[in-house]
Length: 364
Image (cartoon, rainbow, N blue to C red; front, side):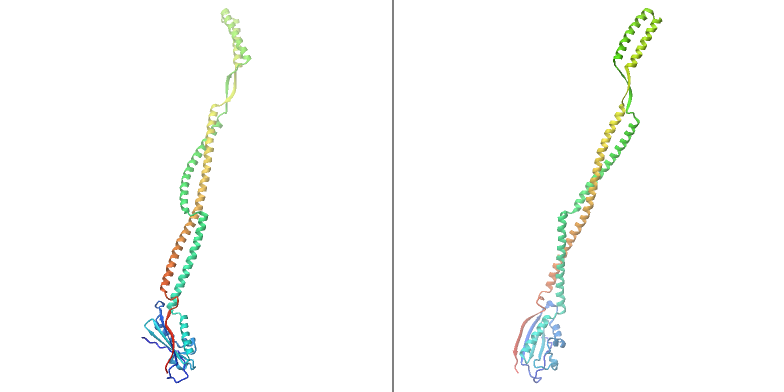
């Protein structure tokens, strides 16, 4: 047994060689997990100033003159290996001996060796880290829950991809519509220019049948019959024949003049171009409406894509932070478990009382 002597005692009001009247002993086991040894604790107890701070009547044996009261208590400390620490208190007053030993033990309970304190602090830091990880995970889960309530649980990037595909198709359709509209505009301009060059109506000669024309026609028939008779009777050169021929010619001229009329009628070419213009303008109106609707649809797609792109960024951030928070929580739990395993047995202190204190009278 390795002995390390530490005496906390006061002078007994007897001869220096007289044995003490009472003695009390306790055996402590220093936990290996604390990182301390029985020798290091014995060295700690060997400090004279520390003993005096516990109680003024506790003095080392080597300093018998340090205290001269009748309640002087001498402490002797011995070690056995690296774990066992034996503390022996002796003195003339039983209460002083028991009280002194008890005070030393209680002081050691409050004493925190360096590695013990470090390991305890590691456990506390690990617990704090775990608590922070739990709070962080709860916060990000709350953010995820709100996001799902507002936007759903599906990754918006999937919707963005689908909309971008639709947008590409609609954009191609719009380009074709724009070309078709431009062609129809050009055709409308050309047909309108044609109409401006064409008259809407043209003058036309038509036959007219009235009472006058019918009378003139009958008169012409009679004159032609008479002229034929005169021609046969008098010959072509006769004056009567010439007068008859002149009458026939005059009535024929009057008939032609009265039976023919000139009026304005619709120009067929103008009507044809106008009809073509009507059809092309109809196509232009229809295609322009489709083009405008397509532009609106594309604008809505673009706005939705822009909105979902922002939401997709928020989605990715939340889900990434959630994954990180879950990993950090798992790590914090493992870290705390590791720290607690390393500090096993230290919860109740860095030492255990395995024998005593026992108090007995000594033989003088």
